[in-house]
Image (cartoon, rainbow, N blue to C red):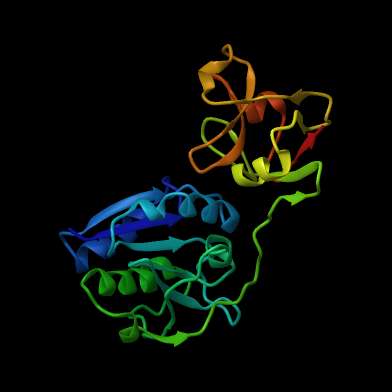
Length: 261
């Protein structure tokens, strides 16, 4: 059975997600729709890219992904469809794809060119992306719905950690529903700069520090803070059975600094 996924900022309080799904089911009654997340903060392409990037590769070949975040078409933000590793991704070229594909290059990109049936221009996820997604889920080609382009504009670069021989300076990229603070400091960078040296992780006003990386949350007592590398190999500041963001007073894009001795 074909799969179409949804990553949107539509929320779950209103009827918008239901309208998107109804539009899909009208065209493909037997399709399997998977919600990656419909609770991305409004227009937040950074969070949408983080959430999507860290799960889409686990889907089977042929999966079609709709990213409906800041989806309105403009002169600078065109609607595109991408083929990568035998999966398809549809969305607005508003910078989100540059964040998702900072390390790999898509196999093919087209700018969508079909005319939508609705005259409404403010709900592209339903009126444009769904039509493209259903076409691809049926086995249709990208060439039938768009004109190939050589590359998308690299409008926003991924906020990578900054390093020197003794320091890594990163930011909090994402706060999950458990209050875990996920940074842009990856394990490879930590090992490459750290070289098994002693270190301290500094955050907030830098009056407190963490000096050890743990392998699981239960390594510390309940309510204790810890650092861990999550399943996506990004450094995470957490609290065992507590919300680290609230108790440590940290927010998106706050600085996390690691000093090595």
